[in-house]
Length: 197
Image 1 (cartoon, rainbow, N blue to C red):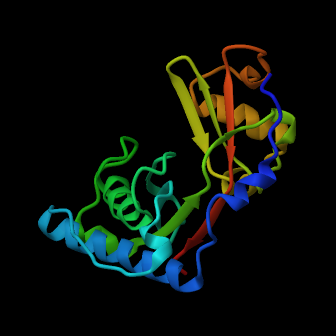
Image 2: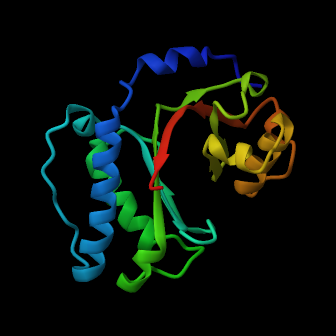
């Protein structure tokens, strides 16, 4: 089992986004969908909001406006690019490179709504410190890995153990793998989530 980690420390690593930051990122994500699916060239935008220029992990989720069904979701867990660039990259990947769905075309985007998750950095976490609704999780064993964002167990009304077991399933691992004492790594993170109405 993984040594415990004080997840409260994570909040000090990254500044919270402002309402303006979030609004601009949604606008850029929407414009990226439109511009990329017209030309299939990655667009560039200039933004001067400081929080958008700081490296931060990000996920972009696309859903059907009418049914709320998932239409694409891609992201990364490393803070290896400015948040602005991450949103552009993951918007394109969610629209065109999620293997679970056929790529979007320009005519599809009117029926799509966008959600963004800006993550804190991943940290090792003890399974029994996990709080449903607060923590997102990533499990790694050998070459297999799976990640679930903090809102996922809330939306499915999962309890603590169900969350951890569904994380194992996402990674293609047997249920209860998270209980193993060696060879398994469990990481926790927090997230700021927002989306189009």
